[in-house]
Every structure is written in structure tokens, then in C-alpha cells.
Amino acid sequence: MLAAPAAAQAQSTVVLTGKINGKTADTVAVSLREHPLDPKEQLTYARVDNKGEFRLAVKVDGPTKADLVYGDDVAGLWLEPGTNMEVRFKGEDLATTVKFKGKGAEANTYLADFDERFVENDGFQVLPDNISLYEAPFLSFLDYRRKEEMKFLQDVKEDPNVSPAFRDYTKAEIEYSYANDRLTFQDLREQVVATEGRLKMSSTYYDFLNDAALLNNPTAHQNESYQEFLLNYVHYAATAAGRKKGDPEFYQMCYNLAKEKLQGPMKPIIMGRVLQESFRFGHVKMSAAMLEDFRSSVDQKNKLYPVLKADFDKHKDFAIGSPAPSFKLVSASGDSLSLRDFAGKLVYVNFWRTTSGLSLRDLPYAQELAKKFNGQNIVFVNIALDENEPAWRQLVTSKRLSGVHLRAPGGQRGPLARAYMLQEVPAYFLIAEDGTFLNTKPKRLSSRAAVDEIKESFGKASTYSSALPAGK
Image (cartoon, rainbow, N blue to C red):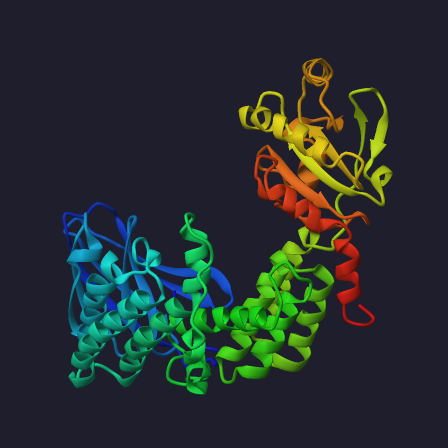
């Protein structure tokens, strides 16, 4: 969905009237993004009468991409001041049968044709098949796709009934879908093609990024692929500078790169996107420092900051560096233990239930991990959410399970389950030696990667602390 333009414009009402052949739902809607940094969508509904007819009016802030929604089906829309269209489609197949007539119809017809020819055609997509190509044939695929798309764009350029804004949108879609797919190919291929290692690219593969106009394109700001490219670019640039996503400074580096290299309305939006990533995966104190810098030096008109502050507040309690909720529970051997009793040790917490098949399946892996790290500065704390204490105690003692075994009263509706916001079990948490979160979704006990993740976590809290800005 298109991010709303950063600069507010006077709103204008556009009108859609329509006819649905064989209606399957009683309402139709247009979906618009309310805020460039808020995933919530503004849905404007209209009633579909017994004849399948409807009339829908929606306000837009200048030219914008939207979605027409009918039941579970969606079709792209291009709306701008003056749009007044008749829309017709079959109720059981909106996306491939939609037809337009009236003011704005030409642009929307092109949009539907583009989706059918290129977006819905797997032969023109990176996934599922083209990701397996090597560098040279992959670039040939991208070049061929772009050539075919440019043929399509020629018709758009020559049509006097479409606006310059729509021409800019389609041109940007072609340019930045190419740039995105080329930029992310190496990483995506490594994730998807499990039979091979990471490709080593030629020395000139990333040279296309040297084009300064690719980063700061004033005619592309309405295109969602442009925004995704810019975010992927700052990720790439931070990685090229030696930072990994697990490093304390990764999101700070991305934030600084966006602040330094980007211009125009996309600059604060991409910086905001980086902040939202940091809220979820970065260190809470670093996030707080960047958010304050954004408020004071980037968003003085307070357009984006309120949404970012609300997002920060929503995630801060479970961010890296936030104190893990404390507990004091009775162990299977009758001892009373609290989280503070493990101060100075890395703590891997496993919430489980004796009646959960998935939890029971993970028990052998928990034993293997405990043995593998025996004698090292880590404790494996298994907290059962069983309401049947005798059954839990019997299982732990009869199986002679290693690690620390505690039981939380109240089960999954108890106070500790609520404090850790548990939706299901098993659930895992990695807590640093200082009692703060290192990861609220670490690798599963059964994952081979769990061993490497734990090894890399020793002392990581102090690494984060030493990387914090002075005075934070």
C-alpha cells in the first residue's frame, strides 16, 4: 500500500459507482493508508444493493495508490482529484474481471493490465523459480523483464488521458522493482536456496547503486517500491560498513545513513521505518536516543513523531535492554527461586506445559543443550504453566530432567504468563547476565542454530552498554 505523502495537501473527494455481477458480499470498500508509518488502513465502505450496484465516495490527498476490496478479493486502484469512475466486476473474481469507465479509467486499466502481465505472472517474479539462477542469468532475467515493462510504459507515456503523476508512478515501479530485486538477490538467495552457500558476486554487481539519482528521486515518492528500496539500501550500506543485524550499532548506523544520504519527503519516512525496526529488534536505550534526535532535529512539525512514540511505548517493555519481568517461584525440589538468583548468568527461559505435545517434543533438546553448556555461565530455566502440580512434579522427577524446573501458578492465565505476554507454549526468552532481555524470540531448543546463538550471547549485554551514546 502506498505511504501517504509527507506533505499534507487539500483533500478532494473521488467517486466510484459500480455494478457487481453475481454479488457475493453486501459491502465494497476502498482501502487507503492513513499514515506513512502506521500500518492501519482507512476503509471507506459502501452498501451493495440487490441489483449489485453501489456508490462510494472517498477523500484523497492528491494522487495516490489504493485498493478496492470486495470480500477476500483485492484490486489495485489509482485515485486522484477528479476521479469519477464506473467500476464493474464479477463477484467471485474481482481482480481479473474488473473494468473501468469514466474519468480515471485509463490509468486504472493500465494498472490492472500491469498486475496481470507482470505481478501475477510467476515468470516475471524472482520467487519461486528465478531466485535459483546464478548472477549472469539472473541479471539477464531482470533486464528482460525491465525491457518488457518499458514496452508497456510506452503506451502509458503516449496516452493523453493519464496524468503525469501516474506516468511517474509506473516509471518508478519499473525502476525500483528492478533495483530492489537486484539489491536483495544475494541475501534472498542465501535464505531460499538451502542446497548452496551464499553466492560471491562480481566486483561490479552493486555498481548500479552509485547512481545518486536512484536514491533521491523527486518523481518517485508516491511509489511503494521506492520506499522499500530506500530501506533495503540503508540495510545494505550498514552491512557494507561492517555492521550485522545482531550488532548493537546496526540500526544506529542505518538511521545515520538515512539521515546523511537521503533528501526530500522520503528522508523522514525511511528514518522512521528504521526507528520502527529498532523498536522491535534493537536496544531500547539506543532506540530512545534516536527517537529523541528524530523529534528534535528531523520532525520539528510533529507530523511523524506521535505515531513513532506510540510504537516505541508499545514495544519498549520487551525490547533488548529492557528488564525482564521478575518472578519468585517454587522449584520441583521445593526451593524458592527468583530471577535475581540467576544474576550474573545468561538465562534461557523455556515456558512449557506437560500437556503440550510440542513442549514435550522439545524436552530432549533441552536436555542436550543443558549438557552441552554444563559448567558454563548459563542456566536453563524451565517454567511450567501447569495447573496440575502433582503431574508436573512427577514428570520432572521421574525423567530426572536437567536444568532448573519451576512452576507458575495460574497456568497460561496466571500473572507471570500475563507479564511475559504469553499467547502459547512453548515460548522462549534469552535474558542477559544483568537481567535484561537479549532476545524475546530466540532460536527454538530444537534448532541447530540455538547453540551458536547462545555462544554469541555471553557478555552481549555489556557489549550493548559500551556502545550506547554517552549519558544514555
